[in-house]
Structures are given as C-alpha cells and as structure tokens.
Length: 459
Image (cartoon, rainbow, N blue to C red; front, side, top):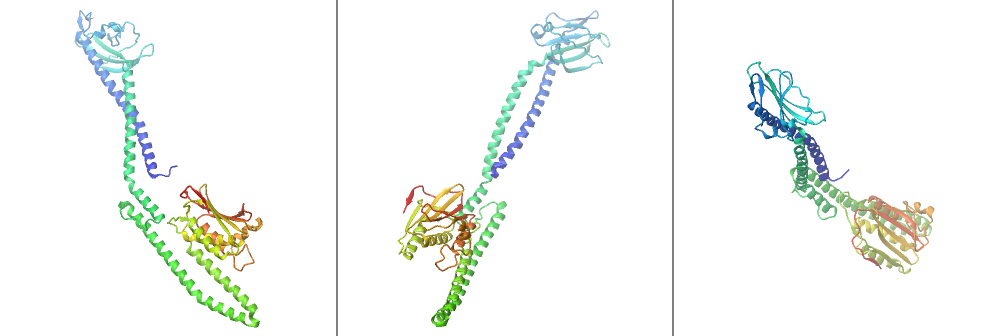
C-alpha cells in the first residue's frame, strides 16, 4: 500500500472514474442503439410510404408500377427489400431486390397496425422490419400489409465505428481527467508539503516553530505541534536547570566528606576508615555523574540532529594523549571527510569520550576509529591493540557497574552511559575482537541518509 496521500487520492479517484467510464460505455452504447433504431424506423417508414403512394387497386387487384421511384427497390443487389401481403398473408408483390432472399415473415392484421421489429432469415442474418397495414379500396376491402426491410449488417460498421470512437474519446477524457486531478491535488496539497518542509527544518535545527502561513484546516494541527515543541523545549530547559542545581547542591556535601576523609587519613588509626570513606565518596560522585549524563543527553523526540565526528575524535585524542603521554598512543581515523552521525553533538562527545578513554587506558600503542555506511544506518568502531576481552565476559563488561580494568579505581559506569545514549537513538552497542588484536566496540545507529563526503582519509 502506498504511503503517499496524493497517490492514494489519485488512485482512488482513478478507480472511481474508471468504474464510471466502464458503466458509461454500455449506457451510451444503448442510447446509440436506440437512436439508430429510430433512424432506421424512420427510413423504413419513408420507404413504406413510397410503396403506398405508388400502389393502386384496379378491379379488386393490387397494381404496382414496373419501376419504383426509389431505385433501391429496382436493383437486385440492393439491400432495401419491399413486400406487399394480402389479408391471407400471401405475398402479392415484392421488389426486385428480394430475388435472392429467403425470408418467412407473416404480417399481423389488427386494423391499421404499425410494427417495427427484428427477424432472422434462414441463414441467420438479422433484418429490421417495418410493417404498416393499409386499406387502399375503402373500409374492409382489400386490406394490405406494406413491409420494408433492411439488414442490420448495413449498420454494423457504423455501430463499430461509434463504439471505437466512444472508447477512444472516453479513454482520452479519463486520461485528461486524471491529469487535471493530479495537478489539482498537487496544488491543493502544497500546504501539506509546506508543513513537511517546515518540520524537516525543525528536525535539522533550521527553525524552532511552525509558521502560521497555512490553510485554516491545518491551523489546529500546526498550533498543536507548536505547543508540543514549546512544551518539549521548556521541559528540556527545566531538566537542564534542575540537573545543574542538583549538581551544584551536591558538590558542597561531597567536598566536606572529601575533607573529612583526608583528615582521617592523616590520623594513624584512621587510614582504613579514610579509604572506605574515599571509595564511597567516589562511588557517589560517579553515580551522580552517570544519572546527570543519562538525563541530560536523552535525545529529543522531534528534533533530529547530526554531529560531525572527525573534529570530536581529534579533540578528544589530543586531550587523552596528554593524559596518557607515557604510552605514546597513535590514534588513526578511517572515515569520510565531513562524516556525520544522526546524534546530538553533546551525546556523541560523551560516547566517544568514554570509548576513547577506555581504549587509551587498555591499549598498547594503537587505536583506530572508523565509520562505515551499513544497510539502514551507520557503524562506528573503536578498535585497540590491547589484551581484549574474553567472549564470555563481553555482555557483563557492557553492563552497568563493570570495568574492563579493575586495577584502576572507579565504578565502570562509562560504558553504561554509552549504552543508554545509543539505545535512546534506537541503536546498538556490542563488543567484538579487533583486527588490531584487542577489543573493538561497535556502535550501530539507524538513519536514512548517508554521511556527506566520499573521500577517505586517515590521520
């Protein structure tokens, strides 16, 4: 089933128009046949009047001239036939054109009756018959039936030509109607195209609200969408403000606890308590950071963002290179120039930051970040040449609260943040073996557009 409103309207209108045309063809054909029969009847009536006008009665017998005024009665090969029957049904006169005909027609005498009908001859050929009863010598004396006939085959070509022309004209009219209907619908649905264009601009960040330049039938829809956009924007602002207030309010208690831990550590008997307290403070701090990041990086339901990947990778690589300068890590990139992903820049920065920090910590000397176009979306990979992760532990490592490296302090929530962010964009996160020898984090994000640029580059 098609998803285009205009196509649906045109197809439904075309179906109804085609059904109407199909019903109109036999109706018009029937009208033509009735009109044709009326024309044939009038002609045969005129021919019968010709016979009556030249007929006379002499001594009680019918007398007809040798040559009829209508030449078709005089020609043997003519199609117009003429007969005169008496009251007993016997043929008392017939035209020369009836020489080779084998017709068996009996008139009906009922007093000045006129019949128009169709009959078949012995060969199955159909004839139009016009029969008029006349008393030439006065009342009830020598009643005669004057009959004229024409084969219906004489009008077959005319009927066929009309049917052919009718179908051509109706077919052409249907095509013209559909063309005009398509143009009319295109003009009528321009407003929906305008709404779609503005929604696309909102998704890409080109505008914040729908305009009021739409037909009044769409105003309720556009106003509802604007209210939804305003509500979402206000809600996100409130979330950010609330999260900022929460983070600020928690900094002071954590700082106080940090001071208490340092004071305990300075005491000879307080070393173990200070270590426990320090671990719990760090755990609280990381859990707070995790919840703040998870809430603030939740993607918008209406606005579609795209973030360029390479600048973020380079910026993070420079910062982490300084942190892990003793390792002298080489960071390679394999992606199209100007490659983008359908994700907010802040969310992508958080994802890449966690993955690259893990890679720098666990690698030996090399990290590679690559992007490739996949069916229905994009794949982002972060490979390292470290020790890797056993296959039976990969699901646990990606889960919340697990760490790849237990020799360093922390609660292992970075990958949980990455997983939550990717899943909020209907993507997936998986852990595989890397061609470099270590671990490979594979991210898949759905999208209907390719990242810009075709030129590959490595850095």
